[in-house]
Length: 238
Image (cartoon, rainbow, N blue to C red; front, side):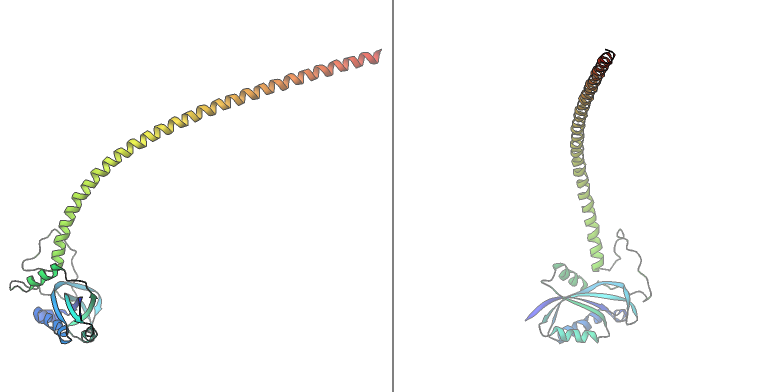
């Protein structure tokens, strides 16, 4: 029983310079040798590698969808490991083949399709400029993706603009709510302050009354003491 796999092959640029169709056929031959079949295969991009592989700093990426029998994929891996054309590979299980890949594979099979000459191995990639139109004769996945990114960005800007308007309306509503809440809070604080002042005034009044009562008691006690002292003196004289 066969299963579908998504495969990415890093092709040596020397093999690409010798001929892109022959480089693709070399990879396809490894797949068919062990009972597999190539469903789609097309040039994805040419890039600088993150680290040198077999003394190569750059490689061309071949994106392919293939069907392998359950007992054939191990043999495919073994042959790819010793291949001089394939520097590295990645094979992942895939549920289905995207329709876009089928269309791009057909486009690459057209007579007018051309593959750019790979740059020198020590070349450094220039920063990508999304606004530039793709070069004539090129039809790579990277360019198609960049074109889509521009469309997505434009749609995203429109969506963001609408989101800004909605956010502004929501901000105004929130601002009104916040102001109302602040006014209510200020009124509550003012009422609390008045209540606190009233309580403080009552406390001061009560304290003043208590002081006056204590003062009156003290004066009454002094008067009584004076009267008692005077009576005692009169008693002693008698």
